[in-house]
Length: 119
Image (tube, rainbow, N blue to C red; front, side, top):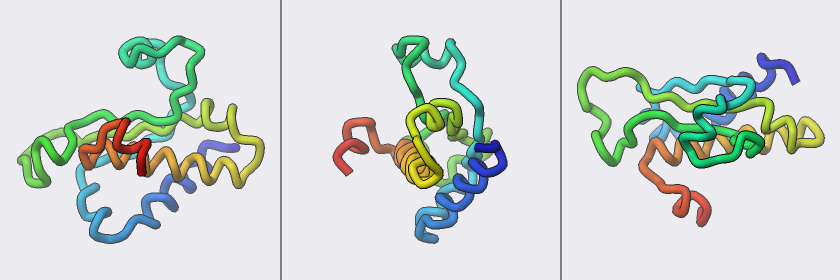
C-alpha cells in the first residue's frame, strides 16, 4: 500500500473519534513511518526483528492536563512496514491501522499497555 493510502486510513481513524476525544488531540501529531528504528526497539526492550505497529511519544494528559502551557507536540508514530507484514489484504490493513491509532491515542489519555489490552 502506498504511504498516502496509509495516511488516509490514519486520518479516517482520527475522524471517527467522538468530538469530545478529538478536542484533546490539539497538541498531537500523527506520523506514518516505514519502520521503527533499531534504537527505538532496543529502548523498548524489543528484538530487532520484533514488530512494532505504533509508538506514542509524549506526556500523557493524566500527567500534565490539557493546558500545560507551551510545549512541543506529542507524537504518535504508525509504522507501515510491520502492519503490512501481518495484513493479508486492504480490509485487514484498515482494521490494523485503526486499532493501532486508537491504541496509541489511549497512551495519550494515560492508559497503560495492560489497561489497553483489556478494552
